[in-house]
Length: 164
Image (cartoon, rainbow, N blue to C red; front, top):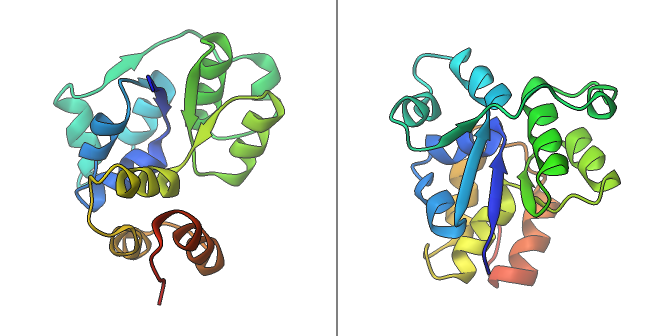
């Protein structure tokens, strides 16, 4: 399946922190980082490995113009607004978001979604990583806000692994 992803900051930052950013390139055939997301990452800490990836030119940074007014009305972050606006104006692109309010907004516009959790689970299913549970543990240590119950259920249903 040909997947095109519009990446938000949190999945890129979290996967970069644990050294799994390469999964993005393995699982998606086309990837863009909207300009609003790139600006958020650039404004972050100098030690952020996602900042290095952007500066190395590993991602296409897309300035698709101003965000849509109907998305601005949701009062989301700059990156989330940029990702959702991009996905609306470019049908077929998947919004890669972790923020709950942003995901609710995207769903209200019937935008296909992925998050950091689903990237890890897809990587496990594709045989790219040996353990989804271990990768998720690393994500939680790196600052991912994932509920244990959500992780347990996802691992049970998809990866057939346990969460301790």
